[in-house]
Length: 332
Image (cartoon, rainbow, N blue to C red; front, side, top):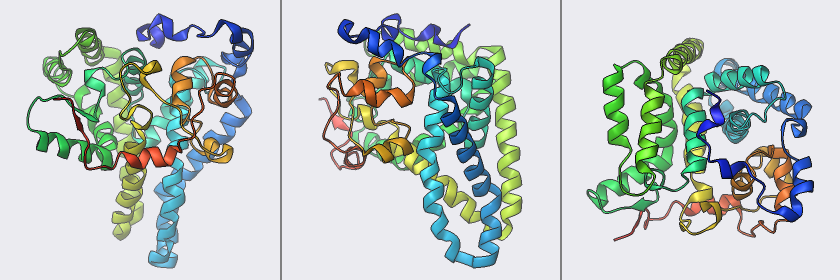
């Protein structure tokens, strides 16, 4: 099955007839910026290999003075995820096989299960901010104190930690995986049964289970080799992983945080200078991405301006606004 089969049909239609001709030129495989994406793939892979195998050498030579390198390593994260995200939408490279190969390579180096990530992201497009997809909202089920701890744990690294260990579901019996998915997806509103059915189909798919187990083994081998190279400096390897996971977790829900269900596409755009937009692969233009998922990341800024979808609110300010004691916001 093609991976776009779970996306809502309407989501790939152009939303504004007056701009169809202009937008059509900026979408599809012909609009993919292949030389730039190839360069960025090399940057991300070289940076990640430095994180895993180069930093131990620098630490041995310079000691803790080399800890300042944690900052540029952390800055790899938004671009690394951004490239995987492009591949999820088949926008990374024009050739489909090359697109998927690079996506899986990037996913292994980041510790992300590509099949599950692609599946979850496309379901997210169809069911954005449904009950399973609102971490900033307390729905009244269970203790608010526990929901508050879950929210803060999720924000400060829990999202990435969950992704790292999510492939383990491919190692348990299918019946157990099915029960886990059924417990994970509540049935609180229209569409939730469809969401549950889709995620159950993911954990019962034999081919995806095999690919997930294989990729997880490769990631374990890669990071195990890195831990061996780090030797006594292994806590620094954990620090690099945590800092990258911290930003991944904080950025995961920025565009949907505290967004009302009647807002367009249940997402928002935020402002960043062009250079910083490049650093995050234009992930700050998430509303535009939801409106035009067929547009590569390099086209989002050009589409946003004529559509008047830009906002003066800064992306990083919005990200850290999630760190507020009133969240998750109670609906009761």
